[in-house]
Length: 192
Image (cartoon, rainbow, N blue to C red; front, side):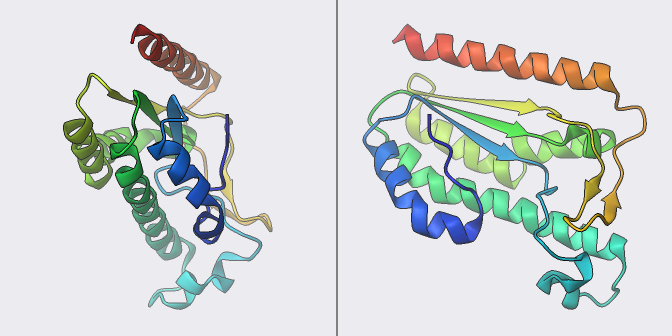
């Protein structure tokens, strides 16, 4: 197992090895971790981030809307970067899209599923399935919450609260589904 860093500035320097390993079929599966845009904010207050400085309305809500949209675009870009290497993989390969932080977006789950199944991200997945065929490539989408927590900056500013009603039962069920899907993907890879 290898967990390469996903941040854009780290991908540039570390992912060439990942690309080669994908092309050569050295992996059985990939887990792409997304969060519907709720990616960790670096070591700064939200107002200090470059994105905040470009906003007309400098409010936490305006920042969050722009931030979430930009991070969803980044998730699509990560998949675009990986796609040609997945397509050229010489062996069977599975891909799991694990969308975490469900406790933050649970009330918008229809929009979230649409984004990952039929929206910009989903369209790329469909292209991969078409290019590789379902005999040698399998994709699964898993929506989960690994922890239940408010969305805060690293300096403690709460920018989004977890969803009312999203409790431990929802979380446990999401984790159970994650384990079940991982097990089904392992079984699938052993079939060939």
